[in-house]
Length: 226
Ligand code: C5P
Image (cartoon, rainbow, N blue to C red):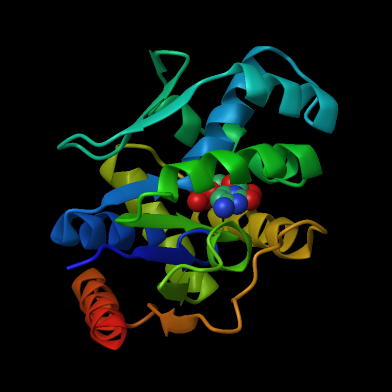
């Protein structure tokens, strides 16, 4: 059966990456975490002390760097110019500054080209903020995954706890809300539900229940096109 593209957007901590990975594994598709690409650029920019408010500096750097996303049994690994940065890009300084980097026009244009190239052969599950609205508006299945702020902060809190990192729940809630606000209010490709995307509120659903819903949508889409 022909492969399709699946776009999953939504705010921070809604469970996009966990769900997208599972859907991709099940279908034997490739998972692409576009947030990791913005994080990789932010990490590099912090390392090199670039001006995070300068679209010129950041987009120029993006053109000169190579970001690789590689699947592995432990999850997706991220490389920048051959150096593994999987853990570094999840650190707090990157997390709290990535939305500033993601506001810039030329940066987003560069990312969009890279992301479209990755998806051109179909068989992709791509998650992010603007996938259904800008990057892959022709994706056959479009999902907007949401969850309450309480639930999203709690999930992040538990993820950190599992890694042995202590975080304050209220502080996490504040940081997630701020990032959502920046992502939804930016001028270029803000976080929005595409008009033809299906919203799934994951607040009271298990990961497997969300995955199941998406797989049903994939089946329906394939039936429609046959
Ligand atoms: O998905 P994740 O939380 O790792 O994304 C990190 C940040 O990257 C987001 O908060 C957002 O600022 C930016 N991003 C974006 N567009 C995407 C994916 C991520 O602006 N498609």
